[in-house]
Image (cartoon, rainbow, N blue to C red; front, side, top):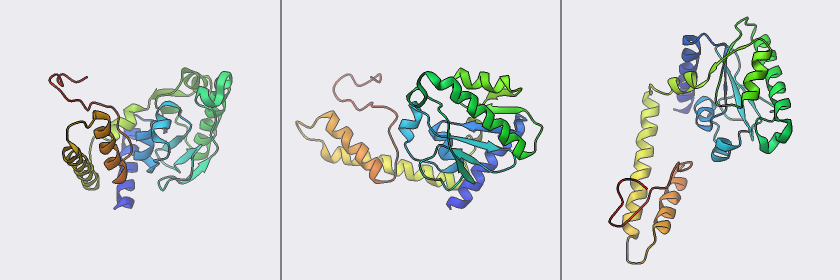
Amino acid sequence: DHDRLRAYRKGRLVQALKKHDAAMCLLVNPISLRYATEYRVYGLYQSHIPTTYAFVPQEGPVVMHGVYGPPPGADRVAPGHALNFFDGGETITDGARLIADDVVRYLKELGTDNRRVAVEYVNPSLTQALLQRGLEVIDGVLVSEAARVIKSADEIECIRWACAVAELGMAKLKEALKPGVTELQLWGLLNYTNLANNGDWHDGRMLASGPRINPWL
């Protein structure tokens, strides 16, 4: 039940924000964006060239900035400002100032006098810009990571599905084992199975054969 899943996850984020007395969280990690809004566009790209970010409050609308199509968990979308060198180059500090201005306006829209904001994995220039506007900045991972610790029944079903996909991928590898097959060809089968069954990406490559496969790599 995806609606129930999203509602649970938003509730977990709100609980974490309340625990740390933060008015909002600025999320950039693609895992966090998926958790908060079910945003799955350019996940691996987002992990090293963050172009999309989300404002998630204790109370109020979830606003996504710089999205490629609105995700189901966002209340509205807005333009984004340069958060990375690829988009901003030498003007990345200017982008940080514009984002900080957006945060201040957002807090005013929320009608809160809480100046404490949780910010996830960003450049020092954004932290500095927020501090210059009188905001208190805390680590956003205290909100985003802590929220994900406790799983709902729907999330456990998702984990079971993911495990089943992984097991199917390994079964495909076993079927393809024959003299002359390469590790890369087998790795391709595992990736294909993952993508064909609604997976996203693999974090690492640890497929190996031969007499010295342990320890890893």
